[in-house]
Image 1 (cartoon, helix red, strand yellow):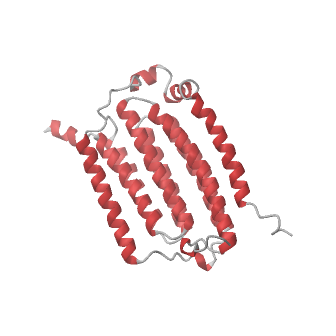
Image 2 (cartoon, each protein chain N blue to C red):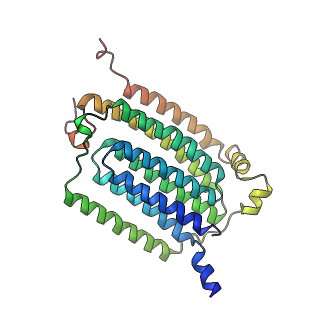
Length: 109
Length: 178
């Protein structure tokens, strides 16, 4: 009985990976169903975070710190991406006076 | 995996609840602050997975820098504009997207369990070895400046490109300011 109790209470690696996938797909759903460009960018950040957690979980499971190094570079890329992305949002708002992605209809001003 | 189940389910439950709020809340400011809570919950999970330096960076970079940027842009764009009243996609499209995403999620989890991923040979960085050689931050720093020095240096070029690009995109055109 104690054997099965510890079996249940131990977090299996696939539980952590399933949790990462759940967060990733919540983010993907947000990208698909929201129309506010800011919320879409936030959902992209959510997806990047889910992937980071997956890397860290594998680094822990396989005892290899390469996964944690990958997370560093992903964090850097995410920071760069949000800076450029928010710059694009500001440029879009200036031309369209809107943050609604449905308003993007023309290829030029 | 010897991690505390109580802490994992606590932080994991918080992260999923707030992640759903990011997607479902109508107001982008509520979404932004829910996202901050998700980042804090993720930092907790990194800490229980023995990634202490990443847990600290998560709070400093994500909750500190990136979210400030988001909130700043929401402020700059003047949330009173009528375009902020969050029109969403057609209900059918919304339903199909959500169902498709969660079907994919189920498929991924099933495939992952089936594949037996993680059967790769274990590395040398056991918990004891990391503690013996000075802790997570020290080992990560030594790796960063030895094995991963090239990507680390390339990061500076990426950041420079991002700075120049962000300024070039966001600044007003010279002809507008006349």
